[in-house]
Image (tube, rainbow, N blue to C red; front, side, top):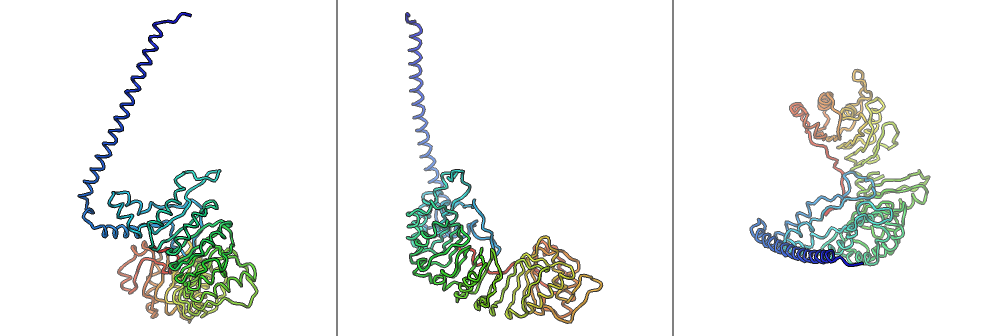
Length: 493
């Protein structure tokens, strides 16, 4: 077949044209790269000149470092425990904030050099799996795996400053020898150690890791995946932790930790099972072995009454969320007027502050009677705090009527007893009380009877709507509601 010369010449022309366009495109790309480089240089020079006139440009590095450290103190921490005494343990995801040190170290070259030279900016070490995983068990976003690199970087930058290490939700595959060695190497300047959701297979490795001296450790928190896992003794912290004062244990066996917990003053244990005499004995031995304990909070997952003559004595406890002669504050959860509570009168002779959480004190005659019984059980308190249930009809009015000796909710035919209820009560705090027109009259009657009540702590909505003139005439102070219960388990910075 003869070759068409015109068509062949056209093909060659198109190939040449394509090559010329390709060359022109490459030249344009090179020009764009050159323009980008020039833009970066101009932007860098502009930023440098701009920073010279910034308000912080004349600050000495030491002052700038102090400002950064103040910023890290003020940064909110979403991993802190809630304000309530007992918290729910929830699954992933967990929020992880932008680290303040990372933030200021990416503003300018000078800020970065100052930030990297300030060890206290890097003392919060978070080893946390955030967010969901796919069906293959892998993270959806690859950058989530950078927690290892960040932990190593922060620990290096913290130098010898006391650090707080938070480990939460890591999987068995995450506890590599390199990671465990990293923890061991920095345990000597660890101030707070927070571990949650540890797989059962990892516990022996973790215990072995925590065998280095921990002279600065002041707070230890452990929550395990299994309902009951044992930390071994004497491998766990064999050198002791002389500065350890706060311990928060979730589903963790207590007795084998006693040598390490000798100096603990605040203890919270949750998810506890008491279903046998041995369980009761373990709890008893564990609590009675803590000779310095003065703040105790216990939450049972399951509790079966055990027939045993061995009582649990904690004579040093002053704050108890569960016979403690030194007790000055007592918190009772889910106190319900429809169920009996056989507490002996004067069981806590030094008790000053009684706190009722999630209580149900109805306005019925039975409710008044049960509250009166509570007043007999705790007659000498000077402060009463009531966290009422939302669906409950409990109110400040009910408390005041009880103090006046009423035993029925019939306003026209109430019965006053001869006994004086809570004769030393000076402060009453009620969260979100129901409004009642009867309160001023009840307060007036209490004052006429010589009762020392002097302050009410109510919600800010109630306080803002109160009649100031009436309250001043009654000489009763009004302030916003506060719980006033110690919170040693909220991790300080």
